[in-house]
Image (cartoon, rainbow, N blue to C red):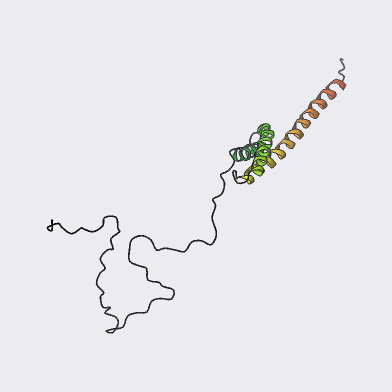
Length: 161
């Protein structure tokens, strides 16, 4: 039993790579080496990236945006942009932007760690309010024009010659 082989290297222990031999720098006289730059620290030999100190604060990623926040903002943009491009027909989307934005802002304020995107929800809410006001003014204007046409049409008398 004395003929047993000695145990080999431990496979679970990381092995250090062989170090290259130190070479003389031809640009410096014998025995002198260049000085290290200010703040330079020699990294230990081994694998991986250099180790940096931990941040002095803890980082928490931002909460994901509320699912309805962007919907409210897009509806508000479409409602207001439609004034120019579609003769105001898209203003009917403004009350929906207002309602969805208000609900999203309430839910974000109730649980800010779970939901983000308050600015998008608020923007949708504000654009929805503006669009709804413009929609109401437009409806009032249409009713006034129709009323003027009806009143002017009945007051005109036609004479037959």
